[in-house]
Image 1 (cartoon, rainbow, N blue to C red):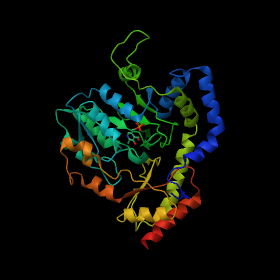
Image 2: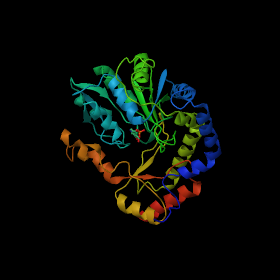
Image 3: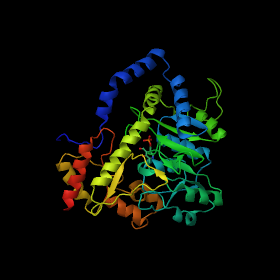
Image 4: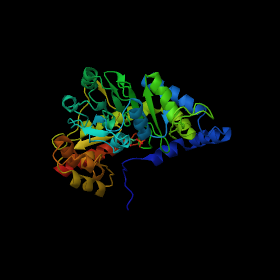
Length: 368
Ligand SMILES: Cc1ncc(COP(=O)(O)O)c(C=O)c1O
């Protein structure tokens, strides 16, 4: 396949810039033989709780495990229900299903995040958690979600996998619920060079149990308090994340600048994208436009050397894996409409201003 002149992501550029430093960091971890656990993990947890303004942080091997452990630790068990949106990466729902619980879906607003006005009617005696997903690096409408959660005494678990550094009314993503769950997958704004994730919480018990569960339930080498898993963050990844965390605000700043350039250059007559509300601080993990001619536009951009993506073409309630829950087409009109209209344009921090102007012009000229 022909190399794209503007790829959707540009991890090779990141590697080129950081190569010398990362190799030193990796070398140091290997040299110290601190390969599982150790000071880099502790350092990462300290850094991340400071960054998200939380009391506790637990470094894990993935965002998926952060969600699974988080749900388990707020008490989600077999046959319970968890309210969430079908517009997410599959892992949000897989984590619910693996605990034997049932995802209860709610439609989204135009900004792709859960519509809080639809939550209350879905609450039953079995509801054990509400899981808003802060898609694209935009925090869900938390005031309303917290109000409902308080009224019905249901804990919130935030899927903040895409939202490190994002704020809502000056509070950080991950700091609203009982547990905030993050991914540090290579495509995230704070990215490892493999799988990684973490959770934050203000609840000491959840913190202590998450630490136990990620490491076989071991209190020490020979004492097992409860059966656990192997969900530890790799030490090399923690060391890399400690280095990259220092740069994440710069990454976010650049992505926000890129959004501004798009916003000034894309013709809003042809495409829709939610603008930032005064109380939001969005980090643009992705930049998603909505348009009627999505597939043809995608092809047009590809022909002109621009890579794009679709997050996500099949809503989770319509995936084969969800058949057992008996949802059907038409159940969530906004999510379904968006699935056919959304297109994710490149917004990574390595783009040049001219790249964004070029993409915007290509989109505008396609519609003209
Ligand atoms: C919204 C959302 N939830 C959960 C996850 C799962 O994270 P991970 O890939 O680190 O397991 C992701 C990451 O891809 C995500 O985007």
